[in-house]
Length: 475
Figure (cartoon, rainbow, N blue to C red):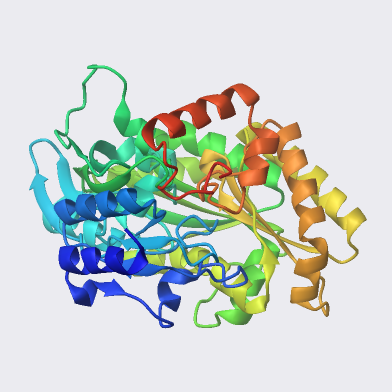
């Protein structure tokens, strides 16, 4: 079946208005990292339901046409955009956006893959419940993409990654068959756990079309604090105290280096950064406590934590949000770091995970190596300290052309950072995935045994190598 007949089949399958071709596909062909090359799609196809997704996959399998599944296209590792060949078909799941059901007794809801994360949160809230996955792109990323990349976010410390929030999946296979695993069971030991195999596979093993997700009771109270600390070692001590005094109520624990917040103050002046002007501290922490009992109970525990932290001399100053609006402002400052860094200029991003106890030594060692290798280099370090995930980004020296810096120094910077991550027992990809951007790093740092298993699984489930080829594993 040559190209034109394939597109004709697809137009018949999903409707002519939902097979897009030509030169106006930029929104689907560009990775969120704007500095990355733009791909070229054969076409963008937008099926309306799982049956149409399966039909599209069968048509592509018959012609050997590669498929790139795409949700909100908020990937940061070239995981959901086509390559430059013009042969890959982008399969957009944007029309599969329904909330199919909410089961308050099972504390679960079933949503389609194209459902925007914020809409899923709102649906749960309207039912008096909580879907806790939260990340900066929640207004545009989709549940299917969150599952495909096993997204993390700001509340992993309490609720886990997306993997931990999923009870079941509906998936279209590489052959165009449909697996319905949406039963929403919390206990099911009937063979291999296919759900967990698909989660985090970045669209290379199957196309997620729907999911059954865990819900939780809404917290009775939330308290949020912005804390200045003298070192990242003190931040780790504070984390230990917060876990001791708040226990499961500790919902979020974010660390932010001063350079990151100075960029927010410069480029996002609509947000006042707490304590930045008043304190000379190099590090700041944003922590949140959610309590299911009462606001008084939450405040008592929070005040006990602050007293213990002062006694341990691990905080310099703190501001406790007086209302939900102020708490949201604190979080908005935190979520604006990436936007502020982009406005400062092109930068080299790293999404790494480390054992929490080793983070201070890693930061000191890597900062020193980079400073020695590149005079004046700026490290913009922030992230989810509570679960060991840092966004250890590197900015060009002041006055240096950012594009030139990126072109000339990216390989060296990546080598320094990733080699040190491996030395300290960490991972080069914590929550952004491998995509096409980090395939070489996976081959370098992953064990040969693990790579062999991955290739065998890919060959077994997608022998034609049609689903997101070249992502995670080399073609």
